[in-house]
Length: 257
Length: 158
Image (cartoon, rainbow over the protein chains, first blue to last red):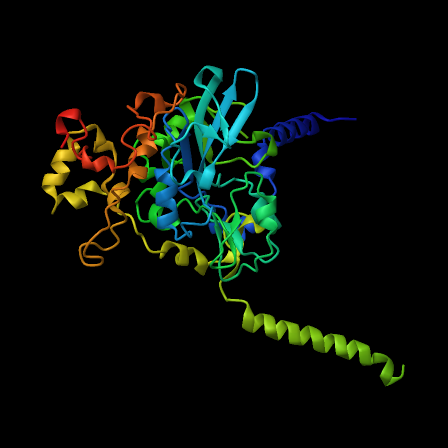
């Protein structure tokens, strides 16, 4: 039989038990306790915005990038490049990027095809560079730990550690990696890591006279680039791959891949 | 158990020890997981500093040029070409004026027609730039023979 004393006791204990917040029974993450520095959110996350409406296809970005980053000038390899898209009224899509767009687009010929202006439905330029993915497939496949993601979101390659196996070059869905003909290792855009860490902007951003390229800190809400990403209609390349690129495009056409 | 039956085991233990010794010598001390995850953060920490120490070639700071070349700076700043950084045509400054003492100016026709070769693409802002057909517009001579890139308006014609 239940006594009055037991009833009061059990009621108080029951209410006290129910009022315990769920957080108080959260399982402690041992790694987080032992290495707190690995779980701190860094204050910088580099992000990039490309405005395809502003690009005129002059290729000054490619020229500056090649000079700044010591990529052999006369070899058609580049960390960044500019693509030309011609979407014709009959539905055909013509795409080219001669010499990565290094010398700009000075000719109406696309891959030896002469297109008369009245047949063009849309024509525009799309600058491309490494997307510095949040989930970089290129890093995942490296068998030796030569390529990695820094805490500020940039993917770098350790030239001393890379064995040149080429897995990462194949795994990049955006084709931004190539084999460096001088160092004989994998090579890619570093967001000009030597410049952005000194407070400068990347060579391509500075070289562009039209402001088609911008770089900034996505973790700073007052940063112009973060504002664009948060408030304007932007898109990323190959979203379905789940790589979560940090390069955002304004005015991206469905024909751009 | 006879001693010879254990010999392969000793060989394996020996090999493991040798591999561990080589690993200790060969793998740099700062090699490990730096960053948020094992999958993306496994690297040699010192490499981050190596990339930061990479030589900067372009200053891309027109104010730096202004200190000595104020006349050139003033003239281009009043023109539509003010949006073009000096080093796009004058080449990377490196440590100019100490090293190199002189920069190589790109006066080529190819540089001008990057923007001024007319392309009928209204969806890009290329259509807003005044352009010529490079094959028909005085194709034999450099643009700078007639046009002054620092004062590109037609009044600035040489």
